[in-house]
Image (tube, rainbow, N blue to C red; front, side, top):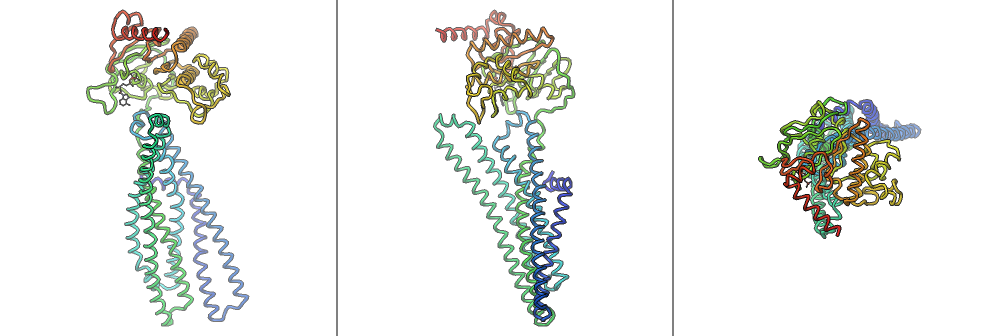
Length: 589
Ligand SMILES: Nc1ncnc2c1ncn2[C@@H]1O[C@H](COP(=O)(O)OP(=O)(O)OP(=O)(O)O)[C@@H](O)[C@H]1O
């Protein structure tokens, strides 16, 4: 969809406001053409001694009234138009945000956060201005142009009007040329601003690493380079915008010269009064605004078009994960992976993050997922979350394929604790309750106790009400992980996925959490609500009690069994187990 179609649709949707604004503008235009006529008639009346002092006062009073009316209508129609234009910004931002929240990791892998933030702010501002500022100036300018030209032609002298219009085609050519340059410069300027935004976002996210590595100066230098590029790009757009003014000035000077020449001759010949020539000159002066408006509108439109050309692909980008499933009942039954194969975009043809994965997890069972770094553990969990769609193979939960469930159903059946747990700028209690809006404080505290974080929370300044995240206190990695686990346990979903989520807690705490998980599993089984878990971990102690453990290497299952069986197998698992036991005993001594 082009920007013009977007605007046309928006205007149709909000036509009452636009119609009201147009009606007020018409009033403004009528008053504006009335005033010079009135002044011209007054001059002629004074010159012919037909206007006495009383009549003059009356005419001046009328002029004052018209001026005030003009001001009020102008203010009101601006407000009406801006109020409606801001709604376009809200609509676009809401659409953009909704799209972003539905996109999957594959989409974000190709986008920079800074660029997306710039689109949501700067670019949408530019588009919003086309629905407000540009419409305002466009309407106003066009109406003024038509009425002024009409009155010049029909109300004063058509010969003067024709001669005055002679330089205008040249101005049209200059405008076309300038607006092309403004489009290119605006596109560049928006891109540069996005790059600057991206740098700030990345620097702020990694400010500690930056400081630790002593890279502040290098980062500041990069920032000032990007800022200089952004400044240069927006200056270039401004320079081209400034070129409208001389074009308007030259055109009007030429038009005034031509009309004064012909007008003087006509007055000399007695075919035109001085009052009429004065009115004509005033009308010519009134053309300054439509000319400037045209330049202003063109530059706003070009900026809006450049911004929409950046935004539209994001709005129309296909969802990385198709949500075409229909089933809304919670999945029940075995989770089955049959020949699941997945390669990330850009991976070499013979390299797979997952290759021919086959496994079955019964309700209530726990599966351990181990393997060296990069072996595919997280990828497997992301396939189950439907963040990634396998290129080959089949995933089934209960009697349906995973893709037959709606994403909402699936995600509300799974609790996932990722490797890097994220806390929002809110209290600890609110962060835990995210998984279950409306959870009572007792439920939150119970979940925190299961995640072995309750006692830590009580030590914080305001306990559960302590603010965390960007605006609050910083939690240690282990504390963050446990808050995230509490969040997942509060949801109490059928399947719990822990992606190395105990890596930052000590082994004692890890054991306590695992015992709690086991107790939950037993309690779930007794009440007929079986809870399964998949625990991906580097530390084998996290999966010792799992019903089934699989060892991944380069995306393939290379060993499978329970802890005892894998020790007997004497493969990677057994040697890793011995190594980690030795390491633990050295640490303990
Ligand atoms: N977004 C991605 N794009 C391209 N390749 C990726 C991406 N994410 C992971 N990979 C690759 O896929 C393979 C499996 O990665 P994965 O994160 O699943 O491993 P892992 O076993 O969870 O590793 P770790 O234990 O270090 O977290 C690795 O070779 C990794 O480099």
